Image 1 (cartoon, rainbow, N blue to C red):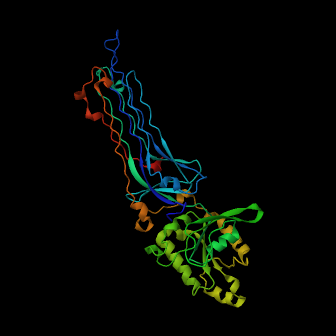
Image 2 (image 1 turned 30 degrees about the vertical axis):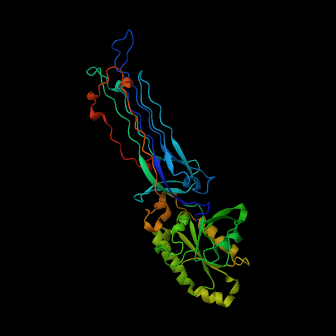
Length: 399
């Protein structure tokens, strides 16, 4: 996967901007000896914002730009001049991107629509200048609020492809061949296991100019949940599918057992996948006669629609598309994005090379203030710590 342009898992370090400090300036003019406080407020720090882009299909740009820092807010100044807000930073991501906390694995947010914006980290609020604190009993406030600090967080971005049908099967079950027969996709096809090393998408044409999207993922073997083969890394791409198409070759020793093994591995990855509509297709059926098909049909699991197909001869492909279209358009299988429960990241779901990546993060700049910035009446000893603002914990799911 190191040489591939398809990157679906990346770890980045983000930092929002800190708020600018309020000014403690006092107005001084030739004919106004006691002008009073006129310190302005500090500017807001920049936000870190995720923005969906349907033209993107990979997280590759973020693999080479792992540090995302927003601009800091400027300090206020005299004459009630407010500081400039820090520049926001927008991170363009493909639709279907899910964000997790890299330290705890907790789900934070997701981006599903083109142009959708999600505030990942909020910039610090600017501090209030001393002009805000003047009153009839406090005519010369010599204090101002400091800006809120920046929020710094390391996050993991996962891409989950948006498709209607997800292909699930063992290596060499004929998934890539079926995708190439039903769509214009041209995945790599060979007679050895794990030919498919990254997910493939294909648009399947149906009657009356209708179509649906089918996703092919690398093959799963028994014990994938324990890290065997390619593990369960690519199963994230079928979590959003309305229908799961299980593909088992006709030459398998026990078709029902292979189906149960695949089902068990999916349950180990995310139990919510058990609630999706399932269809079983017996591939390579061109080498079976009617008598063998009847015998195999007796052993297939009950309650699961099945069809015998051959991607080479075209046998059963029309019937398969009819079954899939009926399942896709069924209202019971239409799951809203908000209804999808994203399981927290654990050891089985993480990518080792990304988790071991070490960030070389520079220390944030610390602003230094001179006495001239605050006017002649600057007195650091009069600063009241009660004016410090505590930074509330920010949850992007509430925005």
